[in-house]
Amino acid sequence: MMVLISEPFAKVALSFSTPEYFAIVFLGLTSVIVLGTSGIRQAMVALALGLLIATVGVDDIYGAERFTFDTAILRDGRLC
Image (cartoon, rainbow, N blue to C red; front, top):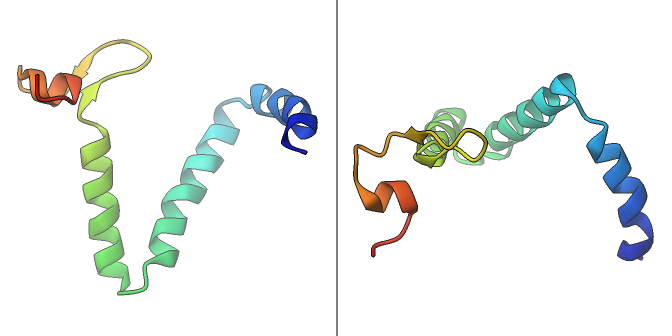
């Protein structure tokens, strides 16, 4: 079933532009807050911590280092 629907799904995904990407990211971020069962404040802290951790490393598109502080561990994501 997945093989049959993968091609039409890929065509739709490739037609996305900036507003659609914004809507997807907005939906994902708001769902974290809505699904936070222990309170909105803790959900917001968890969301902020997750975004902070996600921004460390090398940018996938431009290759720029973000928040690595010139250390190999933060740049590569591995200990060696």
